[in-house]
Image (tube, rainbow over all chains, first blue to last red; front, side, top):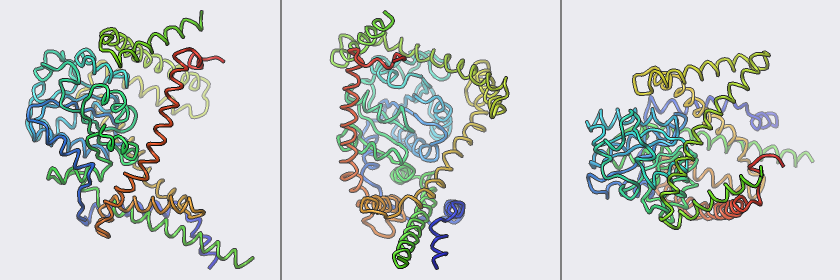
Length: 279
Length: 204
């Protein structure tokens, strides 16, 4: 018996890997379709966009890379869908170099592919600019000066969507899809309180706890945390996207991790008890 | 002078941006300095690329440890710079193809591996060895289960309960850390501005 618990306590991590792998893959082929409700931070995110009048302009900052795509891509697409549905004009920037091709692809898939919006009129991709917080502050003074040309090389001031846009004062709100630094925290610190603009954030699950203080203080008007946040958001918009499809896998994987934690503790306490009895 | 001039520049730049925060009259000047900063940062990229070439070239020429990987790095770097500058970066270009078919899956794979390592780490780390460990372990399990649909299927009140954990105990601790860190940052910033902290210049 002692031998068994000893083995269990020092379980080979490859065994855990196999179980987690199965837990992630199986629900993709055999969906469980577990129902879930929408939490308050996600509802606030949705309501903030829903409250904007049609025709208003929103800055969408796609600050992430392919590494965080599984969590952020579904909410990026969902946010574009809600903005397009509401006929809100989208000005997109990226503070991560690797975010530009992703933003471009998202526009092609949703804005052009599904809603047939016109580039330069309904949406624009201003591209990537290095400088992190400096770029944010610079945009607060002048967006066309900070981004003189867009991602395609067009002069920013020539684009119809950019007419009347000087700085954050001409925008209704900022939607930030954040994979890390620079991201939501920097937008809050450098822009929200200084330029008095609403900010809604979609971020990875691991960084969501960091942003709860900003949410409670009102510096964030909404928060989508990880794939679950994206799934809840998709539910509000009324679509079944990548977020909702990934929920079953995430549920089963969390359950497997939970069981391993229990098994680990059973083994740990059994060994402790046996050592005590021996003494 | 080698120390005094950077301190004076640092003070003036810092004072300008602090002033700009409170007074819109300084905005035109601050905007010009912002543009300088963006250009300087862009030049830092050139410096970074030059440094990558220098360091890796040395390893390749003396066939040091993992030199073959350095060759891949240099070839990849030159290729992407060439494709980006001369062939464009839009969808349908070779640059975009390499990004979507090489960088994208590789980065996604690296991130996906985290799920497996986190599972393995959770198995070993969440042993209830003390009261503190029990508190951490139980909270982690509650949040982990409560934040997926399965938790809601088990108990309807799970999501509001995990939201309470996030909004009350978690938030209180997080806010305390943030306030402490912010006070530290203010104090360090002031020390840099008035020249008491000079380590950013290098040397002693």
